[in-house]
Structures are given as C-alpha cells and as structure tokens.
Amino acid sequence: MNTRRDFVKNTTLAGAGLFAVPGFATQYFNENDKLNVALIGVGLRGTNHLMNLLLRKDINVTAICDIDPERIKIAQDHIEKAGFKAPKVFGSSEYDYRNLLELKEVDAVIIATPWLWHTRMTVDAMKAGKYAGVEVSAANTLEECWDLVNTHEATGTHMMILENVNYRRDILAVLNMVKQNLFGELVHFRCGYQHDLRHVKFNDGKTAYGTGAEFGEKGISEAKWRTAHSVKRNADLYPTHGLGPIAVMADVNRGNRMVSLTSHATKAIGLHNYVVAVGGEEHPNAKVNFKLGDVVTTTIDTANGETIIITHDCNLPRPYSLGFRVQGANGLWEVDGNRIYIEGRSKSHEWDEATSWLEQYDHPLWEKYGEYALGAGHGGMDFFVLNSFVESAKANIAPPMDAYDAAAWSAVTPLSEASIANNGEPQDFPDFTRGQWIKRTPYQWMKENY
Image 1 (tube, rainbow, N blue to C red):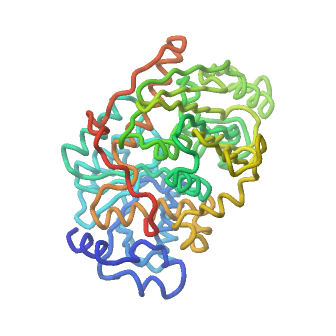
Image 2 (cartoon, rainbow, N blue to C red; image 1 turned 90 degrees about the vertical axis):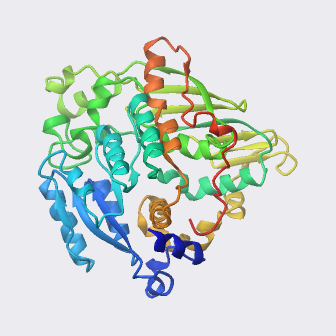
C-alpha cells in the first residue's frame, strides 16, 4: 500500500471524482496504482456500490460474494458490461466470504449484507488485513461494538462505517455553518429516521417493494431479514442516518462524547394494521406480535452539555424526514420547513427560508463536484461516501468515520433497547475511545477532495 499512500499524499486532485466526466479519470488517476476491491453482499445496496465503483478507473473489482446466485449473476453482468475483468466468485455457504478474505488480490472490501453479519464480517476483514467499509448500522450489540474497536486496535487495520447521509448536501452546508460558528456555541440537536418502511418490511415474495404482506422465508430482499428485527426487538433499530451527521457537528469521539441516554417507545400497531390492510385479517402474519414500538424516542446527553433527541418512526404512514435540528446560542436550522433563524441577521422572531443560506454555505465538495455526483444514488451522497472510502483505503489512513464512530453510533440500538425494557432507565454510554476522546483531533471535514 506504500505506493498508494505516496500517490494520494502527492496528488492534489486525487479522489475528486472526476472520473464521471470522460477523460478526467485518465488525467487525474494513476491507472497503474489501483485499489483491489471486493464486495461481500451484492443485493440492491451492494449493487449500488458496485455500479459506482465501475465508474472509476483507479479500482479493480477482484471478487464478489453472495449466497444468492441471481444476485451474483446480476453483478457479473454489470462488471462485464463495464469492461472489467471477471471477478472471483464466492457464496457457496454463509461463511464462504472468509475464503474471499484470504485472497492476496483484495485490498479492501465493501460489506452490504443483512445487519446480523455486519460486525463479524468487518472483524474478519480487519483480521485478514483488508480495509473494510461496512453498511449501517455497523453493530447490533454492545459486545459487537467493542469487537469493532478491539479488532481495529489489535490489528491496526482500518474500517469505515458507510454513513452516506453525512455527505448530504444540506448536511455538509450546515456543517460548514457550524465550523464557521454561525449558530454560536451548540446546545441542542434533533435527528432520526422517520421513514414509512411498511412496503419494505413486507412484500409478495416476488417484488422487493410495495406489494404483499409476507416477510421472512416467504419474503424477498429486505423483507426476508429486516422485518425479523421488528418482531424481536423494541429499540431504535436504525440510528446512524440521523446521529452520524449530528455526531460530527458535535465532535463526538473528538473532544466530546455521548455520556448517557434514555429511550421510550409507543405501542406497536402500525405493522399489524398494514398486514391486515394488505393481506386481510386471516393472513398468518396478522397474528404476529411485533415488538418494535411505532415511535421510539431517545434522548442523549453529551460530555460538553448538549442534548440530542433521536426519533425512530418507520411503522406508520408518514412522509420521509430525518428530522434534523441544529441549535446554538445564536440561532438554529430545521430541515422540516426548510427554515433557519440567526439572531442579528434574521428578522426578529421570524424564520428565514433556508435555501439561500444553504447555497451561501455550500460545502467545497459539493461546490466542486456536485454535478458529477448527482447520478450516483441518494441524491449524490453515495458518490461522496464511496469516494471517501476508496481514497482512505488507497492511502491506508483512518477514514472520516472510523471504528470508534461505528461503535458509538451503533451502540444506540442496544442501549435504547435496555432503556425501554427498564421503563426509560438511563443507560451509560461506553467510552469506546478509552479516554482518548479528550485529545483526539476532529477530522478535517472542510476540504474539497474527500
């Protein structure tokens, strides 16, 4: 990896993403200095990552793994169409990915599998010396959170949690405002995952989204595995889309840390009502007792005195929102309503429409490469998170969102589960940095390469 490290350090425009424009890739990327990437899991999310990788000229896709032969075939077809060499294929069993990790021609792996496999695959990848990128959330239990940190520290191998919302255009603009002290000293945040997932948690076993009332063995895609968590667990199951951006703004693990949380859950009626509406009262799944409360609310205290409220709301009809609010001594921004108020600059007691502010404070990444990123998925943020992973792996350096972040952000799920089970009892956050948060320097987010 030494040549990659030297190349990235000495190339100003490395990671720019200019490969999306014909001719730019050969101009700015050394095609003889390629990162060998493997994918573990090539379902819908893994295939999205694959498609973005195939646009690059500085990578080889050397191996793919999935236990579904149909997904393997789809991935192979995309790779062949893009003009890449055929990868090695794994997936004969659930643990065949370990054979993939033994390949010398793999430098880095992207893990996009069901949640219960995220930690064990990431740990195995780090033990094999492979730079690992894992989809969210990174862990399910506190033990798994510690596994990520302990393995990283024991092996010296890096991993990155692939939280794409940290690269959303409005989020990076607000981060720019935070770094320029527009809001003053920060006091309070709100965020969450408020997304009607009923059509994701159930289908007809033939079409991934929007039809039917089946899940588990009779479902396909996410309904095959994701819905089981709603049956078994009462917790904030998916905290990182909201918490990741807020944690960066609050310098969590880098001068600040989350100290404790309390969580509460409403009753669970949404999934049952959906099954009855789609499949009828006699459908077998109408008898399932879903444990997940329809709305889970978690409040976090930080060492620096801020509070963070996270809302998980996925079982009831509603429009999509991550519910962001960033509030400081001098003003606040709220994503719902697209509004902002800055004392001394906004009219007294009146909201400003936020668009002009977001444009004024647009992040350098989006200013420079936004037009190239928009086709990458999820409004362009998939391009930036993948580019950050590739460039960090090429340089073999710590990524923007590292093992400590993966552990802390993912820990909300088991901690909220324990709090809810004990009538909202406060739960102490483990200090995954073992005290190093006091002196760790915040990652330099305000730059224009990655």
